[in-house]
Image 1: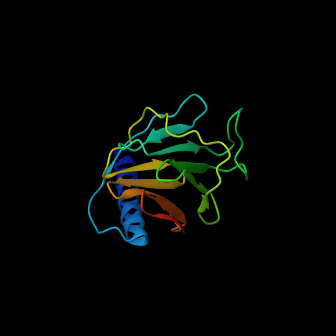
Image 2: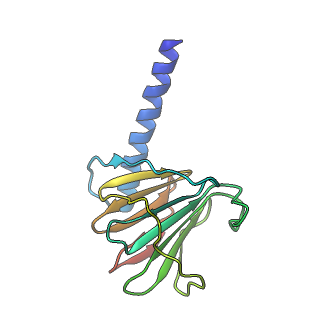
Length: 156
């Protein structure tokens, strides 16, 4: 029993390490070790976070949505808003490419109380997000995602 648990733990840790490395390679981030940061979900399973600058904030919604919000396809979704220099939103669902929305009808950034520290990675359902001083990258394992910073906005 203990051997199986140990083996599962090793496989899980190796999978996480490989996912971080793949995310870095896909996003052109130089190889380095980033620490994971845990985020707390609210009663509906949503996670809100904000970058230390206060200029970018995100909300993750799990598959099935909430009593107040349904994602486009009923699957998990992450939305991140950048306030300056112009308000935009990056959206990534469980499938398809990342999308940049330039005409945001419901600007509501950045009230999250959980700070997403620089040089950290957070796992939110099928998404991994990387916070650096250069900006925020959120992607799925297949490489689809988006990058937001004051200078660059890019969907993949």
